[in-house]
Image (cartoon, rainbow, N blue to C red; front, side, top):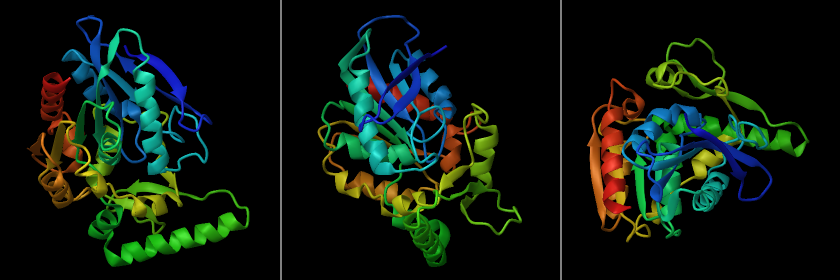
Length: 302
């Protein structure tokens, strides 16, 4: 079983909590990988990936983002990518203090939303010696436009503007549903309607953790639209980059991942995964391939 850990957020306001996976061979002085989950997701859903890397001889610090799940933070269920990126740098600092690991041999693993975070962190932070991004978030406006169209962009913008008016009046942050199935009859807004996503949330390899909630603050939409990591493509080198992109990913459009990879400098490697976005997290999908490719990349470069 992993060890429970906690450390300060970058602004020292909150305790971020997570899990430490030690390699199964029990050797000391091993490399360590800092890992976190996707948009509004639970760290516990990343257990299979963390366990796979630990079996390959790597330590893993898997932590929960601020405002969600077992971590502290207010407003609850607000997804702020810039704060999450800054917290990731603190997670690196914390990982380097952990006994039994070589903090100079440190890697990052991120998937979906946090796949964008590891690209943003590895660019300027050269404590990171190796980085793996799986189906990463690249450019928020383009992602939302691809999934929801111009009407979706307009609808999200109107929601955010109304929320700003509410916050100006001193009201509490408004919560909205993160995801619904495609046949859900509700007309209330949600970030997405996607059967594959909802199947993952309900039936993924770690099930549905008790701490997870299918909600986010409306203001999180504003942050999502603004978040764009393309500026870091040429800054990651000489840190070795492994980019994994699902060929049929429409959640994080594969074309954006391929464009980022083409812009990135050597050393780099591209792995094209079969299926769509959520197949990368499912045991009957490409989870084993994700674990194997990541483990080999970390073993080669840490």
